[in-house]
Image (cartoon, rainbow, N blue to C red; front, side, top):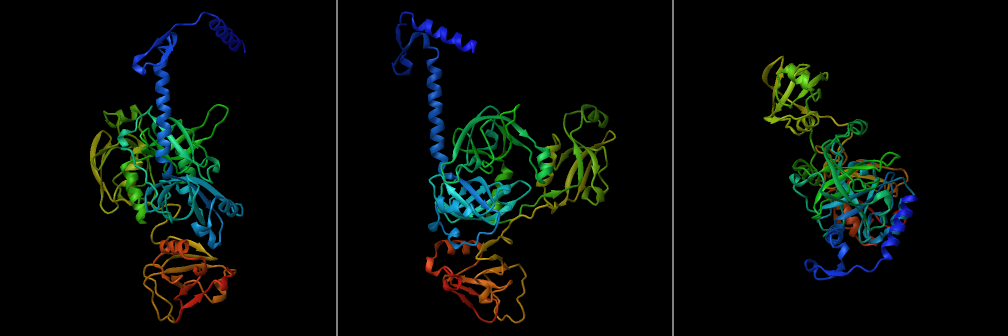
Length: 492
């Protein structure tokens, strides 16, 4: 309070003096400024220019960012799957009846592919996106990678502007960072929220969260751009409007902290994962089965490692490639993998995961002062959560859980027809309107609204585009003849 009063007094004292002469600063267009403020004027103008830059980035990227709403219980409502029957108010009515998750995503392909965090949609029965201009579209999870916490959505929207990725080597500590997203679900109706900060640090790891969530959170960007629950899966932009990271985690504000946000960086490996998820391919991680730590200086010296590199083997997991091979021992210091120098334990875990399981890996290690080169055949890492791929995509509609026809599926003996394409009824509830039409688990839907159905994505598109009066004309090839289910049968 005393400081405030002193400042006020000083201001009054200056204001009571005779006016300071005006001076013209030609470098800034000849606008008159106070002579006493000439040194501050360039800074003021630079800040105004920076403000304009933020606004430009906001306009440039807003169309590429979407709010995500996910229902964690079944939503058996045909209108919920049709963009023409949805708006923010209708979506809110649907969400009020179910447990929901909110998050953010961004367009990586103008054909309607949207990237987000797996933890946003991993337990979802139904998903919708809301664009910045308040349009609502249904979406389907077409690929996921639980370990890296990434998921790909496919929406019925077309011609959405896709983001551009910044080169990984361009990311620097201290540069501006801009987050756009759906904090606390406040942008569920559109108009994503923007926050600005800097990159505080690179290569951060969250080992406790990794163990708790059974994921790998390492090599993260730490940012002061405000990130809150609901920002998950959203983009972190640079000042050029290019994506440098995917907002994923936050240490929430407490008395001693203002909150710290973390983003997954856009690395070449992540871009490859994006392509795999878009195509519905499974992301495979390799497994060695060693517990490692970054060695201390004395541990390196004991192993005769002269440079600050390598990881120390603290233990071997039972029945793992490392233990079965017998070529890796406790206290070994591994310094290279397939010719790449190992810097620390986080990097080692990432490199092992990216290796191929089709051929042995080459390791260079120090053991009791001697250098050794060995080979080990890795195995696929078994993940706690099942990934979504082209072979197991799901869509819930009118009390039915629908998915692809399994590879190698053999139809029942009484079924004469063997459809090559369609979607299989994986499960059906007793109160489904299709039950009274004698549709069973294992039946294959081959057409809806007079259009042939090849897979789940085509079914999504047909349900979105078909006229309301024809949407429930369904042909089921599950027995010797087709079954037609009409609008009257399900009470539409």
